[in-house]
Every structure is written in C-alpha cells, then in structure tokens.
Amino acid sequence: MTRITMLFISLFTLAACETTEGLGRDVENLGSNIEQEADEAS
Image 1 (cartoon, rainbow, N blue to C red):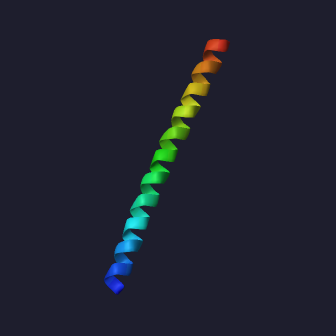
Image 2: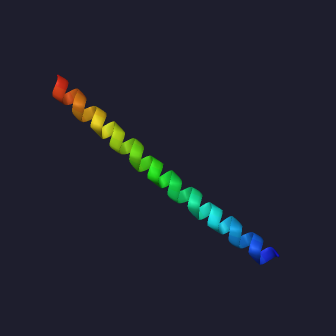
Image 3: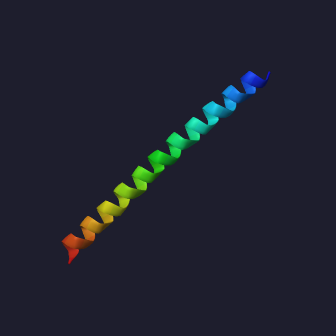
C-alpha cells in the first residue's frame, strides 16, 4: 500500500513540475513577443 501511494505521489509531482515548466516557457515567449511588438511600434 505504501509503495503504491509513493508511486502516485511521485507521478503527480513529476506531472506538476512539467506543467509548471511549460507554463514558464509560455509566459517567457509571451513576454518576448510583447517586447518585440513594442520595439516595432516605436
């Protein structure tokens, strides 16, 4: 029982970490695009 619980906790942690990393990349790309558009507008 303990091994199964630890397995699920590990999988959940890895999935959450991957999701957070992907979100960070998306926000970074959005910021770069906004900065590029601002440079082109001025």
